[in-house]
Amino acid sequence: MQYDEIRGLAAKEHRWSTVRHIGVWGMVLFSVFVMVKASPDPVVDGLGRFTAFFSRFEYGNTVAFTLGAGFLVSMIFTYFLVLNPENRRKRKIKKCLLHVVCYILEAKKENVCGWCKNVALSDIKLKSSRNIKELQSEVQEKRVSLLAVNLYLQHFSEALHLFESALPAAMAVSSAHGLCWIGMTSSTKKLNDVYNHQLDESVSNESINEDFYTNFGEFLLLLDQFVNLDD
Image 1 (tube, rainbow, N blue to C red):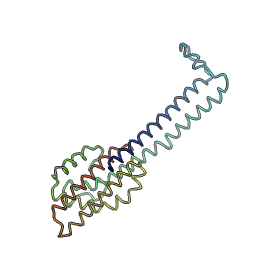
Image 2: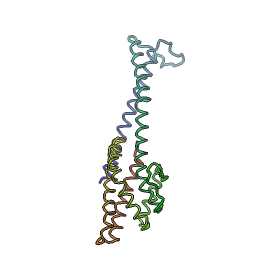
Image 3: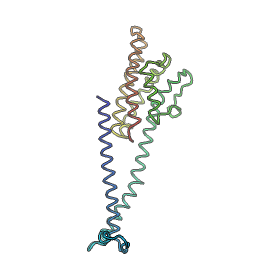
Image 4: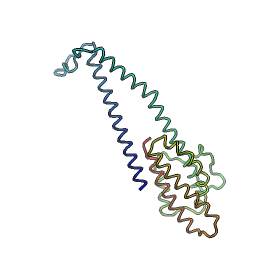
């Protein structure tokens, strides 16, 4: 049900973004048309029946031209001073959030002593969902080695506080990203519990492995959605 909510929220945000872009570009084209029509320059010959359409207004040409030019200038400044920096900021935040995930996925290398604890230096790449699909296939077929399982659980346990503290940053990207991050944090908490259960001798290894594959599979599904969501 959570995956459907994320997809629905992402679709709603995408529709709103599309409507907003259409409205803005429509106003830009209308402003250009008004400026051309209100311009004191003569209409280009050869437009045929459209010549009268581009002829000047009977009244208020100066006001129309000024308003059209003002709107265009405002849009240019808004794009370069507000929208473009905001989009860059969101992409940077998402990249930093994926560094936290890459820190966990370092366990795939099964390197006990050499895995990277610095989330900014991990060479695991999540620019596309191809690597995530490979991990999902390994989890579904339960082909993760026992050493990798232990390392994954250790990494999840150590990264739990990062997931909890990074939620406001994920919400700053978009509501859908934030909802994905909440689900990933929930899976991380469950995997942290599995890690703690390893110390309990009354819990069987089969139960630990089953809980690991279930919760790690849910984590990868949410991660795949997170990576593919529009910024």
